[in-house]
Length: 116
Image 1 (cartoon, rainbow, N blue to C red):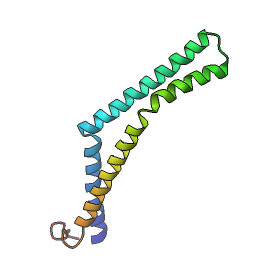
Image 2 (image 1 turned 180 degrees about the vertical axis):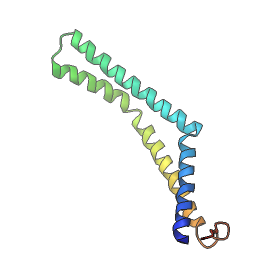
Image 3 (image 1 turned 90 degrees about the horizontal axis):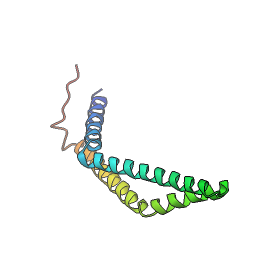
C-alpha cells in the first residue's frame, strides 16, 4: 500500500509538471504560432486551387497546384518543428529521470507516507 501511495504521489507531481509546462507562456506562443502557420498553409493552398480552377485547369492540375503550394511552404518549417519536438522530448526525459532518481533512498525521507 505504501508503494502504491508513493507511485500515485509521483504520478500527480509529474502530471502537475506537464500541465505547468503545457500552459507556460513559451508553450502557448509556440502553439499559437503553429496554429497561425496552419491557417496560412490552408488559405494559401485553397487560393492556389481556386486560381487553378479559374484558369480552367483539369482536376489533376488543380490538385497538383494545391500540393505544390503546401510543399513549398512546409519545407522550411519542418526542421524547426523537428528541433522543437526533440527539445521538448529531451526536457521531458530529463525531468522524468530526475523524478525517478529523486524517488530513491535519498529522497525517501522527504516523501514519507502514513498508512492508516
